[in-house]
Image 1 (spheres, rainbow, N blue to C red):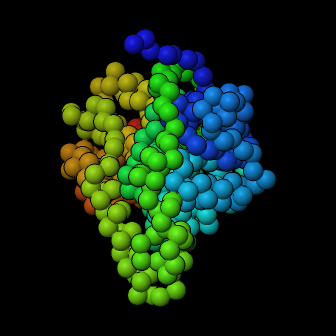
Image 2: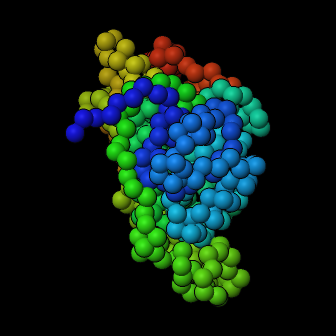
Length: 361
């Protein structure tokens, strides 16, 4: 079968992947730098071809609650936004986590705090990987570094969300959302029939087993002993995810003396820096976490015993570095290099930072 190859932005690839996956609904609100997601969906008019609902809600709060309702009905639903908008969604995301509902959330990050800038950032790492909203929960967090991964991770995110009955988030930075690359689009998949939905998502018709009333999907439990049972069940799910769904990419780590741990666009820029370093005789490798949660702790721990130092470049003041330091267990020196305000460093800057931190006496 001939591959269908298109040239498009990362945000456009997200939208096309939603349609191709057979999504039932998208509910969102425009905000830079992810507005092309909604624009592409409106231009494609999937309600005429697949029956997919596309709705611009009145706010991010409304859109996440529409996603909550769609997920409670057993539908394949999604929303996308950028950092300030995702902040407004946190209550609804926490509700879905407690209600054990699968859904896909997309955050194309911009700089903050507050309204900040429309330029790219990676400063929502804590918000995504540590839960963001209230309570003890995690989101499966996928970090694409290419337009192809923006496309592929839509299907992967939904598959994982339905497998574990929990929301998943694609955490992309504005660089990946706005850049253009060739993409191989997946074949069109049919939406699930009503009977398939009933078999796949029994809660949509029957509610949650053990609830006070049948046919209710809710995050509320007034009996503390039952709420503790619920939370213990959530934690067992998260443990399964940590055991089975860690994903990462390793480049040049077999013989490296030093390691760079980076995600998203910074991993791509770091890869060029590593190529430059190798030409100078410096053996540096890259570990790129694809799942920011679950984080590849075991691989970081293993490599920390092999290398002389670890550099963590990020478009923030230092967030993923905390997980790297915890995983490395004090085996090795770990340093951070970050740019703020939407400034994206060059490969030369990353390599210069590495040399100053680790090679200057």
